Image (cartoon, rainbow, N blue to C red; front, side):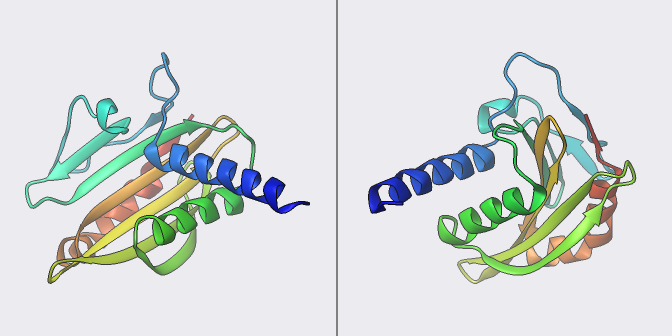
Length: 166
């Protein structure tokens, strides 16, 4: 493979990563999932303009969100999790703190990536769970200050486990 071909392939992969993390939704269709709004959170309206299909926040500022993308081109969970990890580390400046396998109560397998970064002197955590079905790639996101995320870790994990994909 020539250097030029490699650059083209890497550019396409970077474009896929950007599209995935930008949350390009399936145009013209209803939500291909069910995400329950946890107690203590309020669902936010009109989030599609911001690249989200669903988003909720707590009074303290902890945010939960879902992005969905058509599963094209087809790839395995490990591929898509690595795309998200690379994008977050290289383009977002986030440090990967941990990675673990998860399985929703519906039986959909996923990868939970836990990232950290500092905003000024305040540490923040950003968790992204990547779920892949035959038709969609889902990013379930949770973010806020380290104190908020760690204090609500069990609630975030329960929200991820209860997620119902297409």
